Length: 298
Image (cartoon, rainbow, N blue to C red; front, side):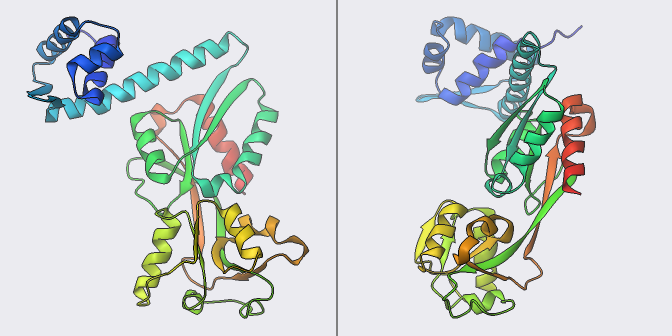
């Protein structure tokens, strides 16, 4: 009968792969290098395949080692979550959910929705962290998160998806701007204007650059900022216009600080989803939160 893999050996294997050296991994794990080498050799013998390529300057995983590395991270993350969740039970908590969300989602309704959920379920614990969409997808596949809430404009293959909310892109500018009184704007109308770039390299930035390229224009932003809140402040100061979700910009538009003109493009509505691993791998707490968020979005 095949024995289950030893979590300690898996942790040591992950350390070796991340450090690229048996000696460095041994120091990280407070072991002597010979003991670590024996554990890795025993793991290779148990699996019947070589897991590491020994080179002059260290080690790298073989193709089989790469496959094990991904699975080992999943197993170790699941064990760590189980430890945290069971520890919380001793303090009266009856379940926990780790949620990763993209910056756009966190800037809108998700924090309030989760706050209301916890007011109904005070004995559950929800941790909420900001991540970019590719990191959210990777963490879900690796089992390092229970739920991800993100724009569906990314590769979500292999994940269970539930519709959440949507937002609508608009052109934000100072009320004195020449375009501020238009009822709506096409994206091409903005391309010859001084503009503010938001979250360079993010999904929305990529979308806008792709649409500009289709129009034969390379965007030249006067200022680049990392957050939508910063963009709103800079736009209000009259330094340029920005393409922003209306739902984010509205709180900044009070007292006539911003003019918000709808963006009349088929891609201006962004749809967000709640992503998780397939049904058998979701906890009861994660299912409960998913259903609450879906209902809140209605």
